[in-house]
Amino acid sequence: MDLSSGDISAMVFKPIVKDDLGNFSLDGHMLSVLMALDGKMTLGQVAQRAGLNMANLREAASKLHKLKLIESVETATNSIDKDFFDFLIAELSLAIGPLAEVIVEDGVEDLGFSLQNFPTQRAAELINLLAQEIQRDEKKSEFKQNMVQKIREKGY
Image (cartoon, rainbow, N blue to C red; front, top):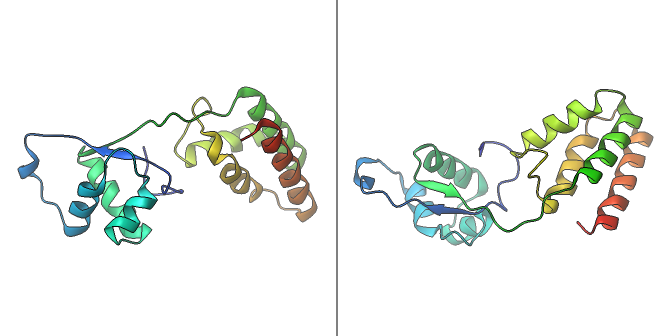
């Protein structure tokens, strides 16, 4: 899991209980984040509670994750279905051509997910990321409109 890019504010982590915690050197931000994580609050909420900006929180959470002191909590979120991705790829293909499927896969991966577990609440973020690949403004606008309509239709 990559915490160095994308929007991490909706992610939820919990601390991992380790007997050898004293063997790790933690800075103040890391300690604040570790103490605030409860497996229920999002990282955005943790940042507010710990008084950190998202850049500092991202750095601290990334270090804690690399040290295996925190783990992601898989919240009971719904994943985007195959029908939505098929429509997304078809719409993007109309705007940029045959590389659309690869660009969608790369975009999903850039946000830290796979096609099988992409959360529905991040659909709009994915659409905005993919729209940046469309050069012509009228095609970009049409793509966004069609995808917003599909998001509404699906109830995402």
